[in-house]
Amino acid sequence: MDGLFSYSRKNQKLEPVHVVKDCKNNFVYRLAWPVFSKDLKTVIIGITEDCNCLLGGQGYKAVYQLQEGRWVKVHTYDKWIG
Image 1 (cartoon, rainbow, N blue to C red):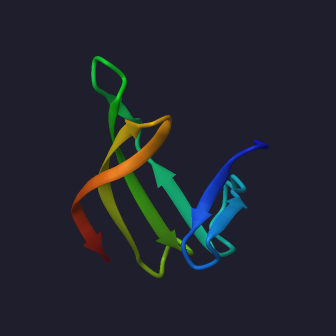
Image 2 (cartoon, rainbow, N blue to C red):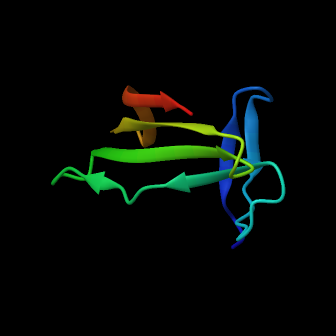
């Protein structure tokens, strides 16, 4: 899949996201299906970061709202580290 990007807080820029089917390199990100409000201005999504599949990981659920044409994270919950 081309054209997928993730914002890097460390580098403060968008970086390409590569979809892989194995756990040999770096981090694997998993996104749960988004759940939208009826007006499509609020969404809840689950995000999991897996460290090479066997080394542990972390995750959380987040609430985003559409504000002035941009999705803004307004709340996180169910955070975990494993």
